[in-house]
Image 1 (cartoon, rainbow, N blue to C red):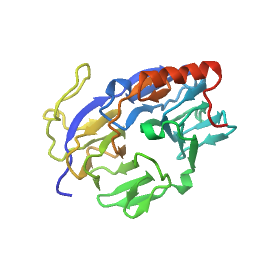
Image 2: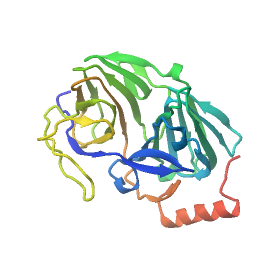
Image 3: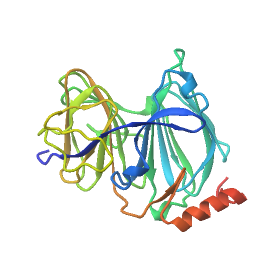
Image 4: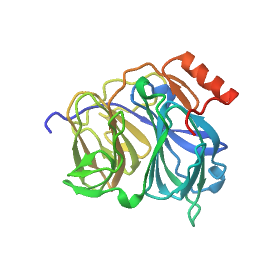
Length: 303
């Protein structure tokens, strides 16, 4: 792993309110397209006040994307237009491929202390799969391998491969990798990533260096608040670290205490994105058709 990727940009999540009044932290979303292609959105919905999440996400449609929900605390009850029902508990993952269209609801509940939290990631589908049949990959916590890597890293492998362990989520079009990595103080994690793939990290807890050379990233986008890595080397909780496309590995070290982060990668689609609300297509015409179908009752292609 000699050719280590350099950081391109770093930014901090922004508070927002979605659904029927769920307060969350948006790590990235519409303004960042297409920087994280094939990924569209990442929400951090951790909270300890039920008033800020109990109203949940009542019935709403999706088309053209995949939503990946990873729970840390509390539960989320879900149901959909195909009759599926279930509960996602701490450590569980729901990988939902909306494809041609689905209508569902997600209703969070706190644990015994009123805490609820996790992450939802949206991944785009290529034009060739936008209208595929909807499907789920329901992943219980016990089926997600947890491995130890050099440097003291503890890694939950949701999707991808680490130290010979393969995550339970498979057969995804964009060939993603989704890792939950925990490091002790002073620990490190070195991981291979194929050249050309989009790679980002989201800092869940603690602080660390995500570029061993601690150099400034390449550029800063207008309207974003970035920091200069020459003055402030550490990336902290709530920040997104987007890597450049050159290189075949990443190297992360915990500084000053334990560090936990999500490390995600995928193959860029390099296709146009037409996005409005919960529906993501390739053209404005396709978006208009989707919303017209939703209004006239022909949105659902599979039941």
